[in-house]
Amino acid sequence: MLAVISPAKKLNFDPLPDTVGESFPEFQQDANRLATIAKGLSVSDLRKLMKISEDLATLNRDRFQAFAEKSDARNSKQAMFAFAGDTYTGLSASEFEADDLAYAQDHLRILSGLYGVLRPLDRIQPYRLEMGSRLANDAGPTLYAYWGNRIGKALDEASGGAPVVNLASNEYFKAANAKTMRSPIINVAFKEERDGLLKMIGFYAKKARGSMARFIIQNRVETLEGLKDFNIDGYGFKPDLSADDSLVFTRKS
Image (cartoon, rainbow, N blue to C red; front, side, top):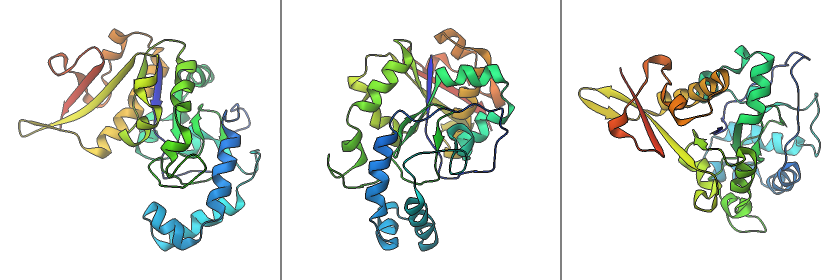
């Protein structure tokens, strides 16, 4: 199985031990091209593009101005450890053993507006560029136009025909153009039981997506039945709400 997650806006570029391995993004040249476009944007442009504050826009203007064509130990960090949002709290990569990291490298992918598709140990530089951003480029007015079918093809290649477990947000997985992919796709939803109703609450769902990715990695899950055994943080599989390609997990909160 190949688990797919979204990136995070929050970053952590504290140094890692030298014992953590590294790799480099397949689409580094594309990231360089997009960063070059972004370097031409003003703070005001970035505010409008990302709908962020002036302080955040200034920070990201500075990040794009400093973006280098090649990543190294001085200017970058491995993606799985550099992203630090709710999904990555659930993933808890700092708890992985060396063999877990090796398994994750083959069975986990992170989608990115700037880098397209990342392996966990691919080095990335600090950036913010959501997949839904309307960053005009030679292919069209959006990043979806820029990436075309290449993200889906990269996921197909990585999965080798095994199921792709979609733990990413709609904004990001849309870039995979799922209808064009050859791999079977399993969509997963996490819901809270409150007052007799089921609700999807963003914070909890994001953390649960990361927790499921960790479950897949640490338990070497390769089958649909194994995926249904996910029970972290009180979640349980709901067969009456699920289908073969759409799994629902709920918990009482």
